[in-house]
Image 1 (cartoon, rainbow, N blue to C red):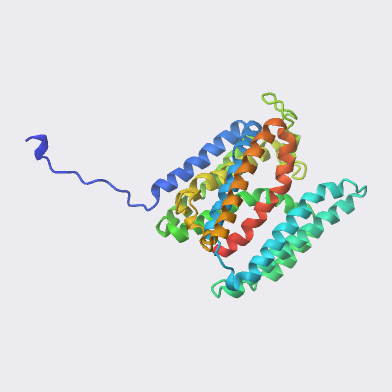
Image 2 (tube, helix red, strand yellow):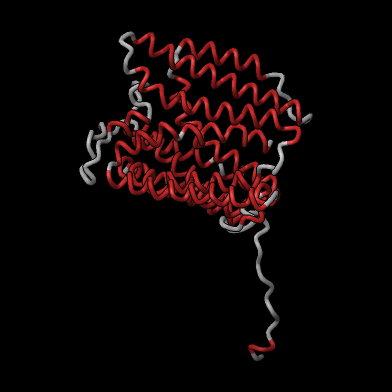
Length: 341
């Protein structure tokens, strides 16, 4: 029998929807955990340098494609969102400057407790407002939970800030789930099965690094002061837990966070290339709005370039300034996530 006469073999397709996407997600998570566990400080430095600016720009571009051109019945929701984002970001950035003049530790705690109280009730207000415009979303539970959280805030004013360091990176996983629900619903079940690898990999990092030695105060490779990196992981607050593990865990979560925003969400959620504005509702309103959106995105790109230059000139100072104002995109994700519910 000749080769030409052999019957054609049909292409084998996976019966699991989104299997390739799920494998890619697990690959990103495993790679992030491996790098973070092996070189936590060096990877933390490189991760922020490479992805801090680009991921914020891609996040803003994605949000522009999902925000309606006109607020309509959500006008109040967007107004409260914007007020909270700007006000809470500005006050959070000012907290270190304000508290450095306090001699009484109780005054420092009061300042952070006031900020956290405002943050909790801002989120609660947004949840309640969203429930008023979406009958499928029950927000009646939010006020008792907010009061309970505020009681905890005044018992320990710093605990919520440390929790946000680790909770915020995982918000990208929830946003990715919402995007899959919207654009790739058949993939969502597979994604929810594999997203459990994130806590599993955190457990592996804990097993390997729970008794690891203290990290040096200066990175020998780059000469960068690592004290702020170690403090940012909450090592000063979470006594009894290995700082080595905390830095590795935070670096791992940040890498997954960046991987979701830089690779996965654009893969499934971008309906056009980032520079194509026809998929942005606001850009379709008028030529003036289109120019405004273009200028906003160009300004964002210039900020990315400035960050890279500043990181190269003075990494430690730039990192502290960046994380002071990075609260803006942390806060912006809250109403955006509620909008997608």
